[in-house]
Amino acid sequence: MTNATIDPPVTASDLMLRVSGLNVYYGESHILRNVDLSVPCGQMVCLIGRNGVGKTTLLKTIVGLLKPRTGAIELMDSPINTLSPDKRARLGIGYVPQGREIIPRVTVKENLLLGLEARPGKRRNATIPESIFELFPVLKTMLGRMGGDLSGGQQQQLAIARALMGEPKLLVLDEPTEGIQPSIILEIEAAVRRIIEETGISVLLVEQHLHFVRQADRYYAMQKGGIVASGETSELSRDVIQQFLAV
Amino acid sequence: MLELAVGIFNGFSIGSVLLLAALGLAIVFGLMGVINLAHGELMMLGAYATFVVQNIFQGFGDGALNLYIFVALPVAFIVSAIAGLILERGVIRFLYGRPLETLLATWGISLILRQFVRSVNGVLVLGIVLFCLLFFGGLWFLSKRTDWERIRTAAISALLPLSLAISAVAGVLVSKTGVEVLTKPWFSARNVDVTPPAWLRGGFSVGIYQLPYSRIFIIVLTVLCLLGIYWFLNRSIWGLRIRAVTQNREMSACLGIPTDTVDALTFAIGSGLAGIAGCAITLLGSVGPNTGQNYIVDVFMVVVVGGVGNLFGTVIAALAIGIVTYLIGSGTLALMFSNSDALQPLTDFFTFFAATSMAKVMVFALIIAFLQVKPSGIFPQKGRTAEL
Image 1 (tube, rainbow over the protein chains, first blue to last red):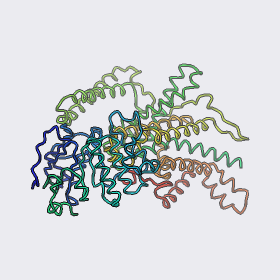
Image 2: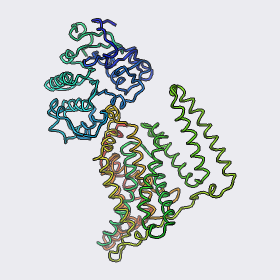
Image 3: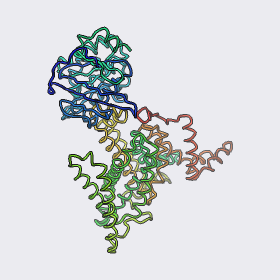
Image 4: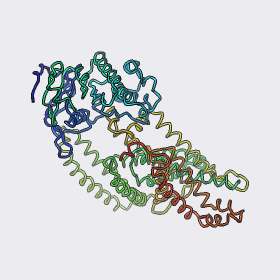
């Protein structure tokens, strides 16, 4: 592993998420190899790497959709390896998957209300806070439409809004700008930046879009299922970008 | 014209029985994608629950007997829902996404349930209760240990034969006492008769025809169940969870929806509806261990023709199949064409099919032809089942 910078000293309690020695297999294919990664509280960490290096697999393992063969995943110092995805969501992991995964045949409003499922003490007041519409004004005009009828950009905004409805402590975003038109990419970038500033939540982001990558505090670069470089995004060199960010 | 109207009413009532039976399956098979061949037996359990409730009410006199159906309906729902819940938790949840294994397992369970109602007696129930206490009690006790995950398989391997052996020995010992209350079968293999309440006997006269009250009651019950299910699925929070899980299971779990609980609840509600259908069919004739088998093929046909996973399609399909079956089987169609000599071949054709079994043959042939044109039914499914 080639550390572009030396990791700053962080204590365990400063970390929202810590992944250590993670090994994940698809059948007998070894996909993730001894992955170590951490997301400090209130920071945005970006995971970069070419297609097929295991970024989405890592995120799916963190949210609980895939089971690691070995290794540990800790959320705020508590091990979550054995927990199901719904329990992890209720502990504070909000997930915006690649391809958005909007529930197609329920309305935008119902999609948003489903986000409340992750909130402890949910449903007593099943309303959508105005702050969601301040972040994504377009959703307010589409509450009655089916989720599957929205455009890609609108679905992406809905997916992020839905995750935010659960008031997560850690927001996991898998290529939120993939296949989205440039003007909407800027809106999504601005929204994610605003979310971090206003709520102080941590963000783990997989992204190919350089402008968005630079919004993060730190980066991890993946190659062949392992972390091969990490450091501050302000120090992202041209070499690293060319090696890991180009498709 | 009156004949046609009465024919349509009777077909409508047959369709409503089919619909009531198919509603539960539309949820279990349509929404969850589970091919549950034991659905007919869950109906049968509902019918037997109605029989038991009726017998209990007989002890309270005629006044109470007139009202037993209103107690039997929720009891049948609960009995079948609990049976369905045990089926889902004990067998089906291990087989999600494996339709062939599910089909075989549920067929096996349907045989077990049929034999169960033939053989059930005090000794059998005692044995089952003892087994559950020993096995599940033992598991519960051991699950308190910190190393539970490590010893889980070994514990189950030890507890299962041990509990089975103790329960079997206890059962044999109790049956040796020869106490008739414990050893006499509760229902036996023969059909049992459930007498409808007095106010459901007879019918509403229209000219020379009569519309039986029991069939009107079933139509009203079907409409109420439909409205209830529609409200539950579209207006309640659990309905929203069910719709979300059936459309995108993984994402629903990532949103914090307890998918296991949703699966269990969906299956229990589908099974409970089968119980209500079982209660309803006791108004039409006697019930026996094979009652469910008479309905299962028709019911699957209704769900498939309607479009798997679409409640509205199920309604249309059930009513259409019911009405067409009756119009052909009763000879109403043959009678309609008999006035004209030019239509004599058509009259002969429909007369040939003017019997219940022959009408079924024709309806199935029509369904097969229809599925060639629209293989996904009237309203095709777009959710999880479509992706399987």
